Length: 298
Image (cartoon, rainbow, N blue to C red; front, side, top):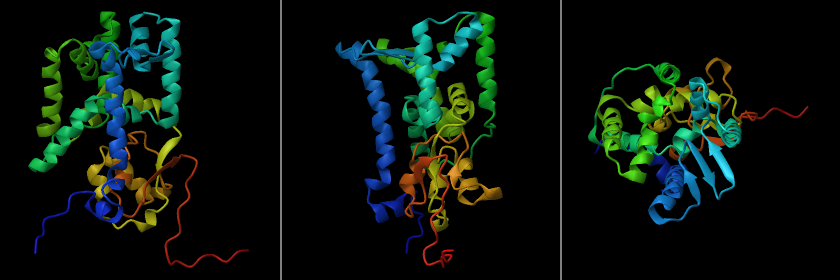
């Protein structure tokens, strides 16, 4: 009899079917690739639905969207952005205050495709061990990008930002972008699990701060049904956010309130017991345990 452990999500596939066990992953990939395609339609095919990049874009010559992190760097350099850029930043901030800042990392950022691929390959190659870099390191990197902007009078970080380099590479030919993106991939593959996105990326650090009070949260109404299979921990890019809500550590409600959560939905996908769902930070009800006696009405 084989004792080979099942891959995370195997129980969910049996219980819910393959499609339901990958629903949020498929939607997330569709979002990431769809957004990237919208930017590429103009330069590649002359169909200009969206002009610009993730730093600043104009959709249908009507909707401006600006990365507020770019606005912050511009202000540090002493440059005052134009009114349209401020409008775009306000729209983006409002959106991520609603759905969670690090939703950018899992639903928009194209580099996440690369780092997720590195993790997928890391698991299948059986690569164990990982370097240790504390998660707060990304905030130090964030601070250094602002210091660099102030000292150089330019948005220096954008010269090496993997997201910006990927866009420039796809628009104009990859060139040096190949080396930067390959370095990120190899770092996550051989050096550290989720190393770039979870420990070093200043963009993720910025959006973490933006989304601390966001409304959309992962809710655990069925946490009593948890069978401790650990699949959610295995697939989560920020597994430390799960335990307090799942195990009611220090009375934590059945909500993942940690701003590090990327709202990727993988815990929802791989749970065969449907412990996790998307919900509101204002909803913290727990479903009763099946078969447990209910309190008599007063």
